Structure formats: structure tokens, C-alpha cells
Image (tube, rainbow, N blue to C red; front, side):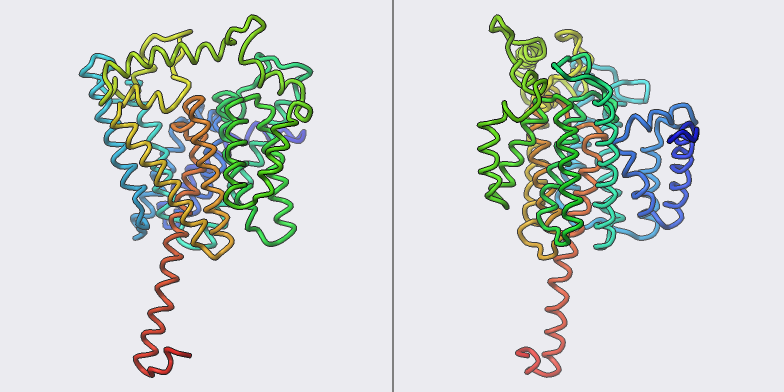
Length: 445
């Protein structure tokens, strides 16, 4: 790092930091454990270095559990929200769904870490555990503000990594082989989903920032994140941004509708040449679908057959990856199709209810809050969720901790903000009633 030679020790220091924060969390300061884990949630490339150390592959799970246990030991409670119950129902149903896969001979029994379907479920369940951890330890306005700040810093590091990686390549024309894996370590499309999601979160959040210097910094972060998104060459990421900007324009800033319209009419003269090539390469010179688009069509046709065979309960959670598909692909390239194939109408219904509640909670906070911090948090979450919903039409961008982990921490913060607003609205009424009991005229003061 910076020519000092200490970069080699950063993974070890970060790994030791996880153990220290586990002890700190269990010892009575679980909020510090949450703060520590936030930058590592998306940065899978750095966490992969922990594999060389004892229990390194499970450090995130261990710290999350330490935060939850530490919070419960010290008497902390979750604020009321339907989202916690929905996640619990979803988690239980997905586990039972794996046994449906066993009964249909589509998967091995999900009993231990040697079973790939159980590992898939276990890794997915870290996301609601992060959500629970955030709900338990984020208890006041200061903690909410700090979570947003740490998220911004974490996003800046991801942006830096993505842009530096893009700058190492020459982009006179689009070349699929030049697309990097990114710091999330799962590929450029997944990285694009993350970037689009949080570019829109901070774009919405900044609408309520009052201080000019902070507002400029926030818009700078949005601009850098959008630049990084552009050079992921992900069409799904581009569409997620555009539709989310449309929502922002409809809900908050109508001028954006005009800007969006002008951009859609002139984008071919504005964006770099390789981006234009990527967007317009859906079909080749012979009028046929290009490789990646054709793969999606073939996968969806095969998925349709599976859905018709078992529409109610599906083939069993995490079974698609175990089957034989086009080009040995392990994903349907559409999360909604994947949920329908594996968990049927029941699983898809629960997933839609989860998304609906997430949108409703964000919208209520945005509309009812009077504190600019809470208003920005609500609008930002609403836009990030819209971006996430769009991105999932192009692949599984939902079950990866790296993509949605920070999002669910912010959801936990938003639920706490909603609870704080309700508590504040009740307290003054109680004070008025108490005073008026002593002197009736106090009620009209």
C-alpha cells in the first residue's frame, strides 16, 4: 500500500479485527461490531483472503451471530415490523422446500456443510441475520446517521476499486473478455446491480440534505458511482438506474423527468462508444440474438417446463444449480423465474409480499417523517429497492450478501427510525394530558 509494503498485512489485521469485534459485541458493545462489519459486507474480494486463516470463510457469519447474541444478552429488542415475521416464514419455507427437492429426487438431504443445497440456504440466511442484527443494535438517530455514513464510505471504496480496474483496460470498443469480476468477486453484472442500487439510494437521500458542502459531497458520490456503473457494461444495471430515476422524478423532483426524456433522445451521442455497442448488441448482424441473450431465452424455455411440472411448490430450493442446463449455467438469469422454478407459487408469493412490505415501509417513512435524515433514508431505500427489483429481472441479485447486505442494514435503520417517530409522536401527547390534569387551561396554551 502506497509503497510501504504493509498491504500484505491488511487481510490479517482485518481478520483479527473480526475476532476482536466478536468479543466487543459479546461484551456489551454490539453496535461497534455492526459498524465494523459494514464495509466488509460487499467487499468479498477482501474477505476471500480470510480463507487462509482458521474459520476465515465463516468470519462474517460468526460476527453477525456475535452481534445478535451480544444484543440479546444485554436486553435489546427488535422494533415491531412485519418484515421480520415474513423473513422468518420465508426462511422456514425455503428449508422445507429443500426437503421437497429431496422427495422429488432433485437434491441430496440438506443436513450439513457437505451438502451444496444446505450451504446455499445457509449463505442466503446470513442476509436476514444481518437485518436482525441491525434492528437490534441501531437504537437512536446517531446510530442511524453513522450507518448511512459508513455505507457511503464503503460505497466509495467499491467505486474506487471498480474504476481503477476499468482504467487498466483500453475501451475503444466493447470486449466481453475485458469485463472484470469487481470487488464483489461475482462478476460485473452483480457489481452493476450493487452500484445502481446505492447510486439511487444516495441520490434519493441527498434530496433532503441541507448543508451545501455535504450535499455536494453526496452528489459527487452519486456521480462517481454512476460512472463506475457505466463501465460495468451491464444492461440490467443501466435499466435499473433509468427506471429508478423515473420514480425519483415522479415522487420528488419533476425536473428529472425532463432530463431523463432528453437523455433517452440523445444518449447515443452522450455515452462512450463501447457503452453504445454493449446496449445495441442484443442482436448480431444476421438479426439473431447474441450469445448472452440467446442463453437467457433458452434457460427460460427450460424453466417454463419445470414450472408447469410442479407449479405449486416447485422443484425444491437450490435445486436449479444441480441440474443440467444451457452451457452448464447454474442460474436462470432472472431471480423471479428462479424462485418460481424452485419454490413454486408459494415461494414467489412470499417473495412478492416481502418486496411489497419493503416498498411500503420505505414510502411511509419518506412521506411521514419530518426529520430530513429519516426522509432521505426512506426515499433512498425506496429507490434502492426499485433498482433491486429491476436488476433481478436480469439474474439473481437478491440472494447475495455482497449485493443486498448493506441494503438490509439500512432497512433495519429505517424500521428503527419509524419506531422513533412513533415514540416521539406519542410522548408529547402524554405530557399534555398530564399537564391538563393539573390545570385544564394548560391544554389550550
